[in-house]
Image (spheres, rainbow, N blue to C red):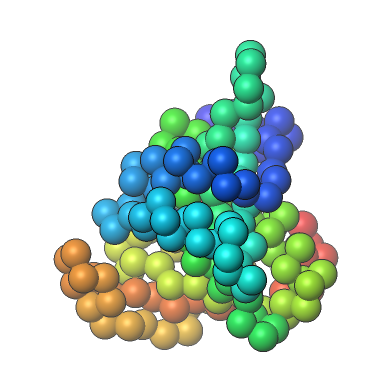
Length: 164
Ligand SMILES: CC(C)(COP(=O)(O)OP(=O)(O)OC[C@H]1O[C@@H](n2cnc3c(N)ncnc32)[C@H](O)[C@@H]1OP(=O)(O)O)[C@@H](O)C(=O)NCCC(=O)NCCS
């Protein structure tokens, strides 16, 4: 699949994006967030940084990716990340993560953290490729199928960013 990343633009999520972001979330996860949760992240949560990826089209750009990141002291927690199924394997997740983690570093984050379903091979491979390491497991964390969550961290955010 062609690497679309050079054509992609990454920007902060706006409240007007929320219906499309929510539709993308529903397409991507068994336990999607509510529209209200996304609206809260964009408009009220001072610890959230929210991003979208767009591809150019004739007419308005199409929103094909989203990322929500939470700050806890010097840690950036990747709360959710999804790319539209038709636009996967084109480097868009890698790109949105690079931009969001760079911005987080500039704001003081020194490590990144996330939870991922133990069976989500695509996401686990992606995070490993970016340098995340498995550091623990929460048994039966996801209540739809009792799947475990893997905890992954990227220590030394500055080293990761200097290699990008
Ligand atoms: C996981 C997800 C975000 C990846 O998005 P993406 O834009 O397709 O990822 P990228 O194209 O940037 O891939 C980066 C690297 O990750 C790995 N990767 C991504 N998807 C993969 C897959 N299906 N199989 C194997 N490796 C994969 C590859 O190493 C890839 O690099 P390469 O294409 O040069 O080989 C996307 O599959 C998705 O939205 N899934 C559903 C939601 C989800 O699981 N989110 C993560 C929750 S923690």
